Amino acid sequence: MSDDADEARRAAEEAAAYTFAQPAVILGALVEDGEARPQAQVRIPVAMLNRHGLVAGATGTGKTKTLQVLAEQIAAHGVPVFAADIKGDLSGIAVAGTPSEALSARTESIGQDWEPAATRTEFFSLGGAGTGVPIRATVEEFGPTLLAKVLELNATQESSLGLVFHYARKHGRPLVRLEDLRAVVQHLTSAEGKADLAELGGLSKATAGVILRELVAFADAGADGFFGQPSIAVSDFLRPADDGTGIVSLLEVPGVADKPELFSTFLMYLLTRLFSELPEVGDTDKPKMVFFFDEAHLLFKDASDDFLDTVVQTVRLIRSRGVGVFFVTQTPKDVPGDVLAQLGSRVQHQLRAHTPADAKALKATVTTYPTSSYDLAEVLTQLATGEAVVTVMNEKGAPSPVAWTRVRAPQGSMEPMPAEAMAAAVAASPLQARYGTEVPAPEKTPEKPKRRKSRSTSRTTRMSPLDRAVGEASRTFAREVAKRIFGRR
Image (cartoon, rainbow, N blue to C red; front, side, top):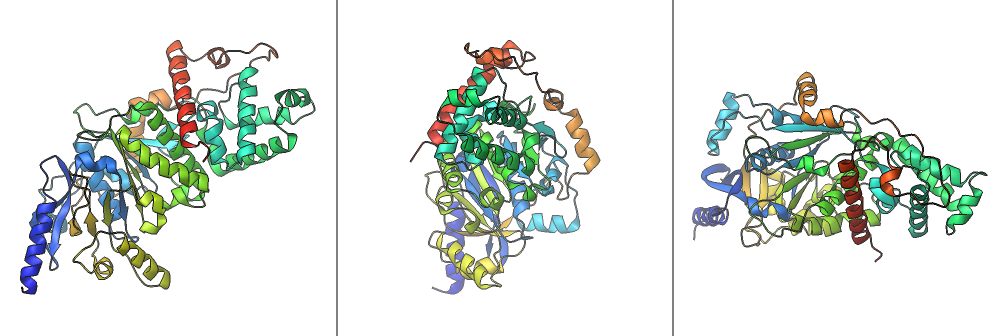
């Protein structure tokens, strides 16, 4: 059979493999012999989005725009989207795109019926650092188990931190901010708190000192602003827009590269909250939410083994809650192998092989793909900007054949949203009225040494009965899931 016939047969097989009866997100058009084939569209079934995925590629190869293309279409299918917008590149999704001759030529070549469209977007910020509705959580909601993992405490120190939380609850000391927890530890290590420290048992002054130092370092890394009230309700990330489409929640995190602990802390907390609060649903027609973690290498940078175990287990388990997770990074090696094994869809943009390390990463990437008629080591270095090698999980749960794909163009703006427009959008958000103003620190409740107060009376009196009930349920869920996720191996 001639090379042309082989090429045509392969193209026909790949086109058939990406034709699904169920609703699907369109990634782009198949590339054959250097030309796009608009009749052969490469898709991901919407029902398979909870099988997680990876979008990878060198800087400037188009992976962030691929993220935008996916987020726009996923939201159009009525699925909420959460994404960390580290560089501000994604904010243009909230603004209708601008047509141009070059854009028209590209979209026509891949069979895309392009129209400018803005996607309903909410902007968030960690504790109000940056432009967005502030996201906060209380230290008490975080709990000792999760906080111990963030602080990288050992088993003994983790147990001791639990005793500190127990002491604070028993003596009516609300743990809202990090300074509240530091104050409790400082009291226990002071001369006045010597008797209380002895009463706790199992908590040495030396261990308490270690915990205090770690808390100070964590606060210095930028975590102080994240802890406070009112704390975010994860249901606000799941609500649909008025027209039934999904809302894209963008976490604006400027300068997060200098504060990876804060970024990782929030992700751990939010995933734990989602896992604890969402019911088991199994496989559904569409996910309840899809997460995109841009610059995923920050998530795993200098991560402890416990943290990596947490991510692996969370990614594995949260699928049954209807949540899909996509990691966006430069190379697959940025993602631990155990996490990579959980990812059903792969969108790999160009990789470069200028150095021995690059060549090694390229070779490792090729081995993670299904058997293909492509010379992937060659193709991956030849991909043009906006092109990718794709494999997805089909409706039967099997990997699709590898397809060289020219990715669609976003319908939103490819430029960041103007700062003034973003600030106006945040000010107009119904969530800003709820979360925009931080609740002042509550006054310390006088201690009653022998009488243990209930949690409902030890928290600030500013909370309504409904808020107290919801908060108590959330903390109970969080403690149980933390035990499950972080249980001793």
